[in-house]
Image (cartoon, rainbow, N blue to C red; front, side, top):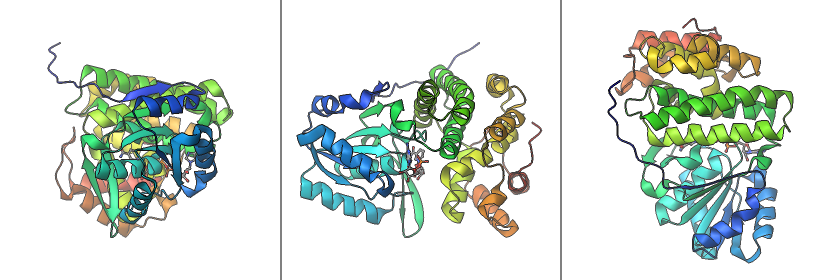
Length: 353
Ligand code: NAD
C-alpha cells in the first residue's frame, strides 16, 4: 500500500472521565485565568449557576442566553457581559449551541475557551464556527475558534433525553462516515473515525435500554470526542452540505436532520467509496446505507424528512441549492440524483446500498 498524507495533531487538552468536572478550577488556573464567564442555554441555566458556585471566586458571571445557530445578536449581548465582568476565559457548559457561543466570543476576543460538552455534537474539538446574521448562516474556520481545553465528564450526560442521545449520536457518526472518504483523510483520522463508529454502535442501543448506564454513557462520549475530532481535521462532503442546506434554508432540526440523512448519503457514496467504507459497513452488519438505516431504526431515530414538515416543492429547492456551488464528493453529484436522494430520505425508504 502506498501511503501519502499530511497530519497535524490537535493542540487541545482533552480531559476525560466521570467526575472530571471537579477538576475544572485546576484547568482554569493552569490556563493562567482567574475570571471565568460560564455560558449555557436558558434550559441549562441552573446547571451553569451551580457550576459557578462550585468554582467560587474563579467565576465572574453566568450568561445563559446561548441558542441554536449562534445568532450574532446573542453573541453581541454576551460580549457586553464579557467586558462588564472583565472575563479572561469562557466555560461553555452544554451542547453545540453553547459551544458555538463560546467560539463566537473567542473568535472576537481570543479569550481562552474551556468546554464541558453535554451532548455528542462534537463542536468542542473543531476550529469551525457557524453563525447567523439576518437569517443567513455563514461558517468560519480559524485557529482562535478551537477550544483550548475540553472536559468530558460522562456523568453530565446521564440525563440527556434518549431521543436527543440517539440523534446527537447519529450526528456525530455522520462526521466519522464522511471522514472515512475525505480527500484529505490520513491513517489517524480513519482510525479515530472507525473507533468512534464502534463506540456508538455499542453504546447507543445500551443507552436506549437504560439511559443511566454509566459505562454506555462514557462510551458514547468517547465516540463523540473521536467523531468530533475528525470533523475538525478533515473535509466533509455531500452529507454535511445537504444537512447545512436543509437546516439553513428550511430550519429543520440539526441533529435529527443528520440522523435521517446519514443512511441515504452513505448509500449514495457506497459505490464510489467502497473500499473506504468497507470496515464501517461491517460494523453495522450490512451495506453501509442499509446497515446504518437498520441501526437507526432499531434505536428509534427519526427516519424520514417528511416528519419535519418538508414539502415536495421544498425538496426541489433543496436539491438545487445543494448542487449550486460545486464541492468535492467521492461520487459526482447532479441535480436529478440529489433530488432522488432527498425523495428517498423524505419517504424514509431503507437504502439498498
Ligand atoms: P444544542 O446544544 O442546541 O442542545 C439542545 C438542547 O438540549 C438545549 O436546550 C440544551 O440546553 C439541551 N441539553 C444539552 N445537553 C443536555 C443534557 N445533558 N441534558 C438535558 N438537556 C441538554 O444541541 P446540539 O445538537 O448539541 O448542538 C447543535 C448545534 O451545534 C447546531 O447549531 C450545530 O450547527 C452546532 N454544531 C457545530 C459544530 C461545529 O463544529 N461548528 C459541530 C456540531 C454541531
